Image 1: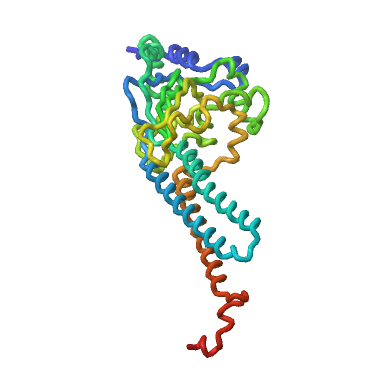
Image 2: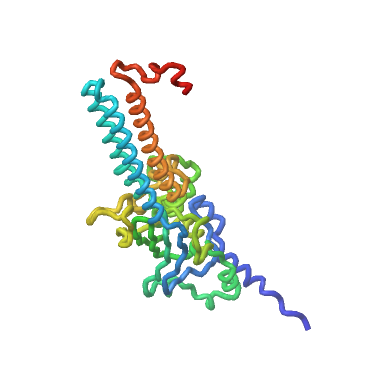
Amino acid sequence: AEEPPLEGGALAAEASESAPSSAGAQGAGLATRQRRRARPLTFDKEVLLFRSTVDIQEVSEMARQRCQIGAALGAGGFTALLFAVSSFVPPPALVALLGGALANSYIVLVITQRLIRSLASRHVDRMLLLPMPAGEAEKDEPRVEEQGEFASLLYSAATVEERLLATAELRLKVRSGLADRWLTLVDLPEELQDGGRFASALGEGATEGEVAERPAPFSDLCGRLGLLHVNLDAGSFGDQALLVAILASDKIPVDERVEPRPDAGAALALPPGAPVPGPLLGDLTLGDVEQAAPMVSKEPPAESIRRLGRRARLGGASVFVAGLAFLAGEGARDVDGVAALEELEPADLSG
């Protein structure tokens, strides 16, 4: 008995349906990404994607205490300096020194505190995937049984990135050191896709024109701007592959809401009614990314906060030591301004 022929025609037909025609691909150019058949991601409960092992509250509080110590040491150093020179320095110079002391305290206590909060707002403590709205999962779910065996095989072979690309929207909750942020990731609207992301990638660096006004993708906001910094080296994962795919996604954030963290410590707590510092992610454009990306540090926010605290303490200690040294030097002089050591005989020095 002859074996039945393979269903090559059916397989070829299914394959031809999954790939765009050459004419369509040529017309779309680089702006069209070829999508393989994939089942959209669905979630009926919260999914923990990432939890940081760095306690940003503790790091910020330690930096705040170091800033306070640095400010106190700096104030002591300036006080010693003013006391040492008050007898012979004219009053305008004393006023200038006093202004320098106040400016130093303001920078260490106020400006540095603002920097700590700004950096803590970039640190991602936790990232959650929220359940999809009722009806969305059924609407996006493909009917595999009606599309043949080959389509079912393609669905099962799809990667996480392909399934994410086939998902219409994702709802996220991101907890940073300063605030809780709710947002939805969606595909770029079709009217903005022609000549969009891939065409702009060829001329990256342009900050003007129609392309520059388009919404920035989530991958640029997290990667190039670091507005949401996920330290993959210091955290635990619920689904690392999905987390990495989301961080590299070209979807754009919409329906964004930000609220201060209710459990923020003293170093990061905002005054009642004060807005959360920083822009909304959905308000940023490709032009904003191109302008700001060269100035963004790649250092994790927690390390930057630690460095600020160490600098403040070291700077205050340096001013304090300098002030005491100047005071000791002036105290070693007699009424004629001559160092007291110069009046000692060599025999006195030898003991």
